[in-house]
Every structure is written in C-alpha cells, then in structure tokens.
Image 1: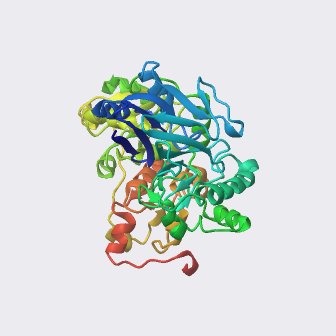
Image 2 (image 1 turned 90 degrees about the vertical axis):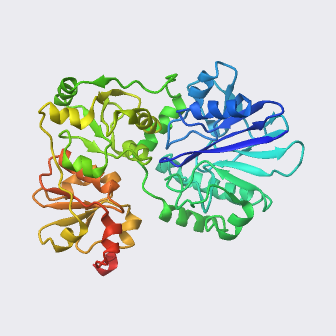
Image 3 (image 1 turned 135 degrees about the vertical axis):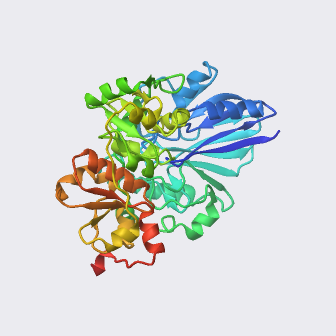
Length: 465
C-alpha cells in the first residue's frame, strides 16, 4: 500500500480540502470539497483511485460546498457524509456521521471526533494506520488552525457564548489531549476570516501548537472568552448567506455556471437596465476606461472573497474581462463564494466597447508622491481595522472596504478622496464603488501603503493623531 494524501488549496478563500486513500485498495475519500470539483476527479484518476466517500467537517460559511456537486459527478458511486451531532439538519440526501464512527480505505482508518464550537455540529477526523491506537494526523476542519482556532461567533449573538465555551473544551479536551507528534491539517490557511490571525503554514503538529498557539495555551474559560471576543475579525457579508445555502444544499450544476458572450449592443442594453457589472481587469486598465457603474475586482484569487462581500447574489453578474480566455478561471473564483447567475460577458472586452463608440468612465490614478504634495485630497484608508491601527497616512479617513457601503453617508460627497490599501487592489475596489455610488471626485493610489512607506513618507497611528 501507498497512502495517498493530497492537500488541495483553493486560493482566495484560503480553503484546504483533502483527498486521502490507499492505492493498493484503489479507494479514497474527499473531505470538504470546493464547488469546482474537477481537481478531485483528476487527482483520483492520477492515482488510480475510486472516490467512494465525500465528507464535510461542518456546514461551511465562507465558501460554497462542492460535496453535492462531486457526488453527482461520480454518478452515484460515492455517498455524502455529514455530521448530525448538535442537532444539525440538511435539505439534501446524506449519510449521518456520529462521534466515534469509523471508516476504512484500505490500510487507512478514519475516525470521527465531535469537536463543536466553531459550529454546533462540527466534526474532525482522526487518521490511523490500520488498527494502531495512536493517530498520525487529524483533519481539524475549522475547529483548530495553525496558530489559531475557529471563531465561535458566526451563528449569531444568541449562540456565541455557548459555542465559545464548547470551543474552549474542544481545544483543551480534544486537541490538546492528542500526542505531540500528531499532524494537524486544517480546513483553512492564512487569509481566511474563519479564525483570528491564522498562521501562514499549511499544517502543524499538536506539539508545536501546544508551545506556540496563544489560543491553545489559555487555561481559563473566562480568559478564552475575552480573547476570542477581542480578536474576532469582521464577519464577511456572504457568511450568513452561504451558511444557509450549504445547509439546504447548493444547486448541482454539472459544469461551470453558464456565462454567454454578449455583443456590445447586448451588453449596453443590459447596463441600461441597471444590472451589476463586474470588471476584473487590473486597476490601471480599469482606471483608464470602464463601463460606467462597474465594480472593479481584479482577476486574482481574492476576487472570491471581495465578490462575496460586495456583490448581490440575487442579481445576474455581467462581466468585463481583460482577456476573454480568462472566463473559466474567473467563473470558478466567483462560484466558490456562491455566484452562479451570470447575464453574460462583454465579448472582446473594453476594446470592443471603445471601438463601437460607447462612452466610458475613468478614475484617475495618482502616485504616493502626488498624494504627499496634494493639499486638497483626503486619503481614504480601506484596510482592515488592525492594519489601520498599525499605522496609516497622516490625515487619512478610515472606512474598512467590507463596510464601505454602510458608511457612505459618513463621507463628504464634495471632498476629493484618494483610496488606498496595502498595495492598491482593495483601493481600486473602493474607488470603483464610490464612483458607482455617485462620488464625483475619486482618485486611486496604486502601490498604496507599501509605496508610501517605501518612499519613506511619514506615518501615524490612531493614538498619535
């Protein structure tokens, strides 16, 4: 036997799924799949394995589950296994998993361990070589991360205190009770908002976390509650929505979501009816000319998360691409946070739009040097609160990008704002949002905070304002 163990990262949502099995028995399982499931089918073919089981550690909030999609693609040869602990209910066919249930894939044994706290039904999976008594690894889902633990506040204020207490006992009584050499494979890496300050490494060990994980070292429940409340990052807007979608069961599409090509005339007609337009080109191209009212989120992995924060899943998305060949990759990123309804894409992109004589809007891009010398421009910092508190441009106003729509009334529409973030990516999203909402004097700062500090310009922190 050769144990096949593949950790598969979905960039952007920073989600880790797993394919594990035994190539002598030619069977394997997939745990926590994303919706673009071809990657698991390809891996199974590469190793000569049949996927017989698909598991979910919990009802996900940050990405659309691909479990039903994968089971459907497998033509009924695999079954979907979900935790029914904690009163969990689902709107789709499933096999119930309870604490202590075991599954075998050739010489690999997998045992379910109930680990509530992040969610009421959360299940982790211990991995064993055959009948050995000590696990070599644990798939910890969102209960335990590298340098962090799962957040317990995603189910609503009425459940947060109870879940925080359960999470404390999960950390102390389950994970910290494992041997030091057990390897931890979590469901998320750095960049996910499912836990505070998740570390950069893709795996860890119980022993390392016992020594260095500040959350795992807390021995008092009251202290744990205080720290978890203080360290919780903002809750992305799409989390409550996707929690409901994943509990009900996402629609099975059997392919990528459909996105038809549109002529300039068709695209223009759609925009006149007030559809949402998403332009995924880079900030410089967008600033030079774009369809009026478009939101700019560049075609990078982070597109998934910021689309989740800012787009309306109830309205069809109309895409403007930098290159029409990007379409499949862009659609995958949007599908991961639940977007499956597309009105179409502008065939030929902005070149076709301009050549047809259509009007376009612009957002000036200014350097940090121009911003430094400007007397009548207010820097608008759209980074997360902890980034702002760590240092910002003097005289700046702060409005976190994820909450910018709710703070528009606090901004002066007669002012000239220059949006900035860490590098300019989020700043361009913010500038496009402000322009689409009728703010007439908007600038964007490519390079943003990194460029400002690289130039050696002065900074300040909130306590020194």
